[in-house]
Image (cartoon, rainbow, N blue to C red; front, side, top):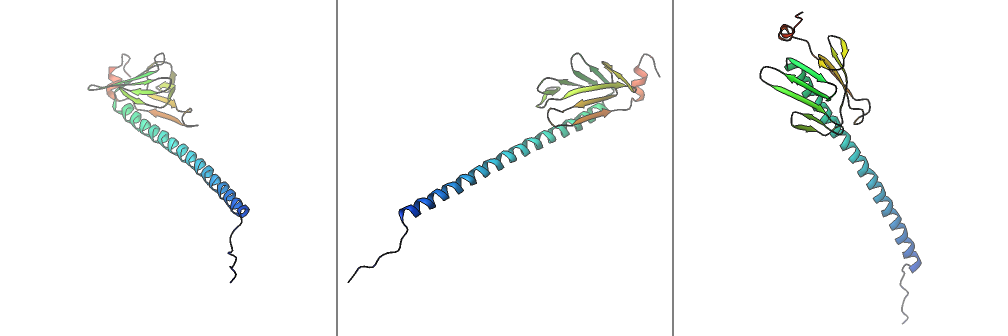
Length: 158
């Protein structure tokens, strides 16, 4: 009896299959890495947007609940006072502070206004703030109405 020949792949065919498999797996990992980078970028932008939205909401609330708002251009600081509370915003090079809370974003105060006129320092009733370095085109504008308490406490009156 003669032994039959077994059908099998040659060594060169197995090497070609292994090379093709390695190329496909390498491409899959490359695509996975690109997707991970995109997800990280999206997550970072989402965190920045969320932090800026919360900052804007808190600033609006503080701006409109405090009777006196004073801006100091030299110190890059905003001081808000009422009968029961004082709130300070300080704008630094790489972060900003609200009292002792750190906001890990670069926020730049822009123009300050009082009764519709642009000022450098002093009492303000409107302020523009920029976060261009964090999100392109992101600008915050807060304003408030001067209440009777504020006007009565002014030296000039009305």
